[in-house]
Length: 264
Image 1 (cartoon, helix red, strand yellow):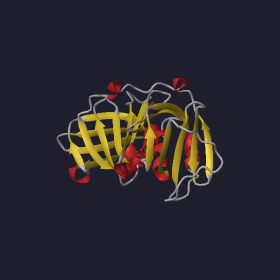
Image 2 (cartoon, one colour; image 1 turned 90 degrees about the horizontal axis):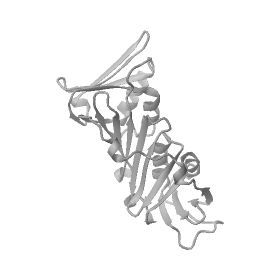
Image 3 (cartoon, rainbow, N blue to C red; image 1 turned 60 degrees about the horizontal axis):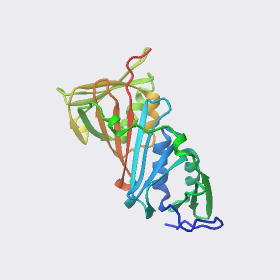
Image 4 (cartoon, helix red, strand yellow; image 1 turned 60 degrees about the vertical axis):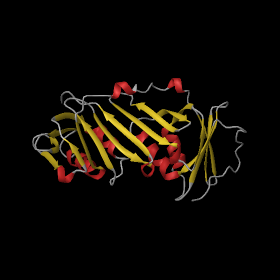
């Protein structure tokens, strides 16, 4: 892995944050955030990077945790900054295979120096107070008694199949049959898929069924690795949560999507 360098930029003598991480790991994390938001607050705590964000329509939320152990080097003491997720993602996307990314925060100038190989990019930060408040964790607890673990690739297949006939998708668990099912109904065609205990890595069955927007689900499943073990929590007319590992299992991400009450 090549080291990030600082060719022409003047770095602060005592930066509030100085962290180095594999470019692919950071790119994956930014893809998760970018599925729902264009900008967010990064909490650069002593134990790692944490993000809590809600989409502009208050329909979906994302949480992301990258502990210090997920970084090659990490030194931070609790700064919270606002960033343009897409712009930072574009810079990180310029990395070559095997590159690392160094993030150096100049808190006084409200700048984040992003060092990737020969590239030094200075990103202007957004006032965190100008960014929408994330959901309180207490507000993300719902009555979702059904829990299961399924391959990320299977969920992508469900979403793709449902998108052929409808703009909405019903997800549910039949406790008696011990199955997780997905159904979509169109004007002329229908799609139905069912997964029993043998198809799932884990299943804690309880009767549950909710309807969701496929537009949101499509964006949420896009950054989920096909070979990941996706943790799903479901209830009846309750949000669905999708949790999965990041950074080789060191980090964790979680999407939450509110249900649709009815289809026009």
